[in-house]
Length: 187
Image (cartoon, rainbow, N blue to C red):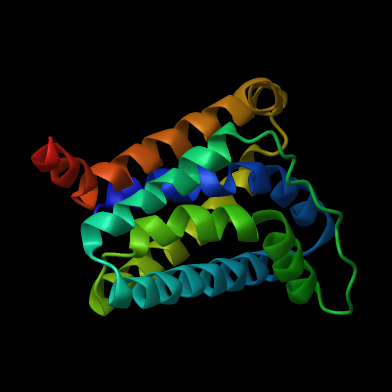
């Protein structure tokens, strides 16, 4: 399990949601935002893992490296993933639904190829690692949300940085799965 890859993947997948967190933290209490965001991450990671495991039953690992195309596609497409804030009687539910509506597609397509080769033990470790990152990110965003320079930099360069991370993740999946070495043996 590569913690650096998980960190980069988590940041790049959630970069656009970090802006939403600023608004959600102004609207709801910190613990409610943390719980809703955490639940959203856990649900999407679990889906990614089990869909990947299902595919792995039928396909060799090197062939699953083709899934690296998904993060690269996400980087190259020109689709805006903004979603309206959903109103709900539960603040945790509102954050959870907002997260799913903003990040479900990216999260599934980016984390699926990253998690496809992991064992159940590594997956549980990944869940713990991402859970800690989720909580830390909410606290950090709560602290830096008021700094004007941060908002300016994120607005100017956030999209490009996110796309670069997606491409790096896709290329890593090609390499880590053995797809590249398998293709080189065919040449």
